[in-house]
Amino acid sequence: MSRFPRFLFLIASVFAAFLQAFQLESRILYFPNQEGSYLTKDEHWINQTLDHFSPTVHLQFQQRYYEFLDYHKDPNGPIFLKICGESACNGIVNDYMQVLAEKFGAALVSLEHRYYGKSNPFDTMETKNLKYLSSKQALFDLAVFRHNYQESLNKKHNLTNVENPWFVFGTSYSGALSAWFRLKFPHLTCGSLASSAVVLAVYNFTEFDKQVGESAGAECKEILQEITSLVEEQLLYDEKAIKRLFGAESLKNDVDFLYLLADAAAIAFQYGNPDILCTPLVNVKKSGENLVEAFASYVKDYYIGSFGSSVQTYDQDYLKRVSVSENNEGRLWWYQVCTEVAFFQVAPSNDSVRSSRIDSQYHLDLCKNVFGEILYPDVNMTNLYYGGTRIAGSKIVFTNGSQDPWRHASKKKSTKDMPSYIIDCHNCGHGTDLRGCPQSPLSIKGDSSNCSSIEAVEKVRRQMIEHIDLWLSQCQDTGYAFDSPYLLSM
Ligand SMILES: *[C@@H]1O[C@H](CO)[C@@H](O)[C@H](O)[C@H]1NC(C)=O
Ligand SMILES: *[C@@H]1O[C@H](CO)[C@@H](O)[C@H](O)[C@H]1NC(C)=O
Ligand SMILES: *[C@@H]1O[C@H](CO)[C@@H](O)[C@H](O)[C@H]1NC(C)=O
Ligand SMILES: *[C@@H]1O[C@H](CO)[C@@H](O)[C@H](O)[C@H]1NC(C)=O
Ligand SMILES: *[C@@H]1O[C@H](CO)[C@@H](O)[C@H](O)[C@H]1NC(C)=O
Ligand SMILES: *[C@@H]1O[C@H](CO)[C@@H](O)[C@H](O)[C@H]1NC(C)=O
Ligand SMILES: CC(=O)N[C@H]1CO[C@H](CO)[C@@H](O)[C@@H]1O
Image (cartoon, rainbow, N blue to C red):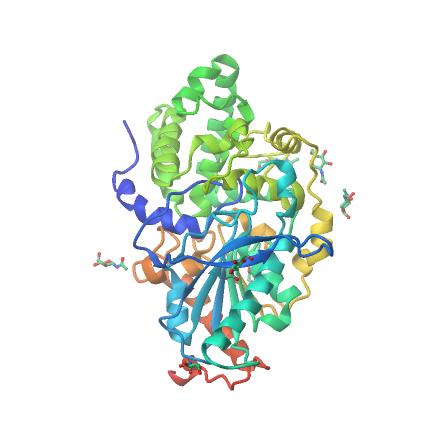
């Protein structure tokens, strides 16, 4: 019998839409889209250059984007570019961006990341076709989009040489893109919000697992470690039975299976629901019942059932598939992992929560197996190109959640022109500021009124708004003086 409360299944529908907007990067998960929680799903297309860095390749592809103009103060109001990351971008999600757009009289636009969703330039995902998939190309896409969109807006209003004040937003990988866009194209945006932004590429990302342990707290961490060793033992003893218990008998590779379990635990802390994992486990431990079975219920009912992950995304044979569908984020993000950013979530050498069989060799083998050639993530080059946590940008707000395992790949220190805020509470995770409550799935319009830690979220949002307001008002070359609707309404 399931130990996990039934209401979880009720909130699953809202979950999926928020997950679509705030993807996790360890193993890309597929989350079905939900109607009703988008501001718009009307597709628009631009012709995009396939290779921005080649003087000889002039191929183009169709890239999908969205616009939501209901709040736009025509014609000189700001334009908020919400950057889509490593998953299909099926519309503009109705999160806290809606509130910001209304407050600032802004247009909301959103560009799908190349290769993901319907913006795939090729009809197969063979490795040779993936060579134009990189953050550098993606940033250039955003610049081209920004330029073209401004021109088409001017055309619509019979204007020439006008620049609206732009501001870019993103969370997680797209949070890094948001910071990097301001870094590389400072003339194209007045500023950037980089929420839980993973700007530092890390090869052996042991801090991820360490943070999982810290966020769990001593008691729950110990139980999770006990479960890991029990599962490891049972893999030796009866591999089929233990995989069946988790509904994961399709995973032939033991470490793929162990990775599924590690992610399932991490997600509770990453997305602010530690108690759904830890409370039942602590009770089961006290009553002396079977811990592995209790954890298997959590994985099946919550991680797969409510949260919307799937076992097959952990299967390397599945990741090898090259046919294009809209839900093949897994292969695409692994390509970025294996070439650019790594974030190999390896077990730390001491005191790890996850199995120590999840090591860097496993990741390298996966890269080779899935893509058929030896790929090596050039983390040093990525950090050389962008600066890592020493990013030399300006007018970028960094935010991070205190319990988020990803926060160690974000900018640690506030600097004068790049403030960094922590959203601090016992369950503050990934992308909380734009999402809403720390502890629940997407709340429409990012409503935080029912949050357990409303003040933690609101405090950081107030800071964010002040920076956006200030930087928009300082934005030069707009062609118009920008009257801040926010300041006027204060
Ligand atoms: C994109 O390119 C195609 C083929 O050249 C052209 O027919 C179409 O009008 C272009 N679309 C846009 C939005 O520019
Ligand atoms: C722009 O100019 C065209 C042609 O002169 C006119 O039909 C249209 O109404 C104008 N649009 C605006 C927003 O002024
Ligand atoms: C990553 O960890 C492995 C195993 O501990 C080690 O052999 C390797 O040198 C490390 N690589 C880097 C870049 O730190
Ligand atoms: C390993 O972890 C344990 C538990 O946190 C700690 O007590 C011990 O000092 C650590 N050992 C080393 C070598 O870091
Ligand atoms: C990357 O940089 C680190 C630190 O400077 C260095 O130890 C390592 O050898 C470099 N790795 C590669 C592959 O160049
Ligand atoms: C907050 O909780 C109240 C009382 O349960 C409920 O009526 C309201 O709809 C909730 N608001 C949101 C945004 O969930
Ligand atoms: C890990 C990390 O980046 N933490 C930082 C989040 O932001 C606060 C506030 O600036 C910093 O103190 C943390 O170091």
